[in-house]
Structures are given as structure tokens and as C-alpha cells.
Length: 242
Image 1 (cartoon, rainbow, N blue to C red):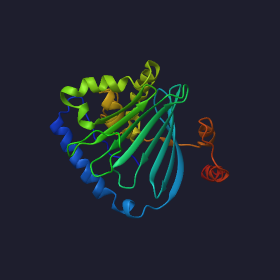
Image 2: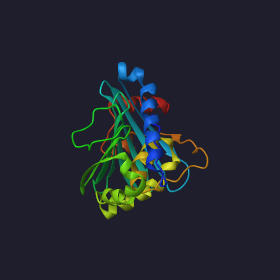
Image 3: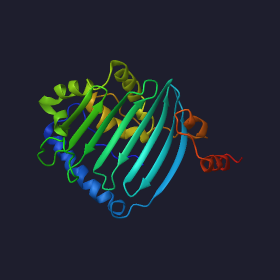
Image 4: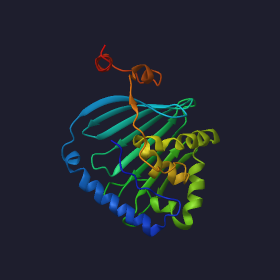
């Protein structure tokens, strides 16, 4: 379910960024023709516990229908709980990710609209193949070309983006970012989201992460306000041999 990120780095220049955008647009078209034409409905939920410290476990709540894909990750990282929500339209060109810190309810949202998708009204004029980035948090809202995060404008753009969240949320996101490399499922929140605003927040992997252990998750999910249905619990009991 993880979507390939754009891998935007600290030293990325506008020319390199435009090349990545063009490649991403082609990949979106090539990878999702069936989903764009006739997405099949479905839903599921899974829970994984990762090895290592600090403690890290998460549930995946996935849904697909005619409007696209929705993937919610309920994450316990150390002592902090996060609700990570990703929505992607059937074309794969319009995606929205939101990170919510459950302790405070504060959120940071990033919407990325790639070339070829209808642009929201508040997006600035773009030169092809640039993309539109919309960021929103407690401190307001920004609509920017993706190239604003590269070259001479990058640092000023990041300062504006960081002002959208409180200092406490910023610290929590940095702690979460340090754990993103532990599972591929969280890649979309690093490469073309948090790393845009805080370069280097998500460490690069030296090797593939060890797999997580599948575990019951209904009680965990209920603690996030996302309880299982009776059918979900029946399936969980069947998997556990109950």
C-alpha cells in the first residue's frame, strides 16, 4: 500500500525537482490504469509490532472505493500516539496526508497535486511540470509550488511551513520522523511530506527494515477511538485460533 515517494533531499535543485515530478507523473499514469478505470471496493485492518527500541507498533485501516484509497495508520511510537491518514484519488495524482498527535489533537496536513490533476483554486499558477503543495495546521494554511522547497527559496519556504505547527507539535513530529525508517508503511510521511519541511528528519535506511510481527489489534485500535466491528473481532479471533 505504500506509495513511492519523490525522495526530495536537502540539496535538491529546481532542475532535479522538475525531473522527479515528470517521472512521478508518468509513473502515476502507468501504475494505476485499472484503479483509475474501475477501482474495486474493499477494506481491511492489520496490526504489527516492530522489534527494537523505542517500542513501536501500528495498525493499518485500509479502504478502497470509487473515490480512491484511504489508509489510516494508528501509531504508538515510544509513549506517543499518532493518527496518520492518507487519501489518494484513483489517478494517484492527488494525495493528502494528515498527521495528528492524539495527546493534543493538533494536526499537520500536506496535500500534493501532481501535474495532470485538477488544481485546487488556492494553488498558485504553475509552470509545467511543477506540482502544488498545500499545507495546513493550527498556524494557518499555505499553497505553494513544489519547487519552492528547492534552490534559493527553500529555507524561507521551510520557515513559513514550520510556523504552521506549535513548538510542541514540531518536537513530536521530529521524534516520529526519527522512527519512520523502521517500516515501509510510513515512507509517504517522510520523503515528500515531513522531509520537505525538516530536511533529514527521516533517516535513510542502510538496509531493509526487519519485518513486524502480526498481532491482535482491536483493543489497540479502540484506544485511538477506532474500534473494531463485531466482524473485525471475529476475524481477529479466527486468526488467533480462538
